[in-house]
Amino acid sequence: MTLTFWQLASCQTKKSVKTIFISVQKDTATELNQTKIYKLKKKTINSDFDYSKLDDIDGNVKDTLNLKNLMPIFEPISGRYNYYQFIATFKGRSFQKVDKDFHDILIIKTDNENKIIDAYQYTLEWAEPPLQFDLYKSDIKNLTLKTDLDISALKLTRKDFWDEKDRIHKESGRLKLE
Image (tube, rainbow, N blue to C red):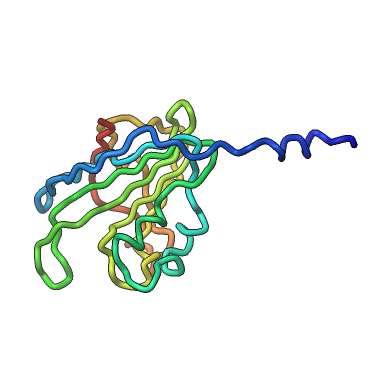
């Protein structure tokens, strides 16, 4: 039996996601109108984004809208990149005019030189359908991931939007890798 190069290549086992860092520390919220601090919560290698879930948040939330059902959408799958997950905890004003803690998740995919390939940002407490409306994506290329990076450098834009004026992410924040 003769095997072609492509048959041999497809027989190679895919490396599984390997967690390099994880933090379960509860963070204190930044105050209203303060710069958000995106703290590193997880770093993995041999990873990628699960684009099928990111491209259909509404279709991937189970019966109840809560963190337990939302977080798997932002978890890495097996791939060939580095994956970083950041959470910014901040005080915000709800649509009911109540100040409360909110959480933005930011996931970033990099190559082995830490050049950003892709990134997504989402407010985990977003409760108005379509949920996809609050998902922002970065198409920035050749930017190196580093601590204190201002998230405005990611040039995040809404994937789905109703008004062109509301398409660009306008909030500020800084990444903390340690």
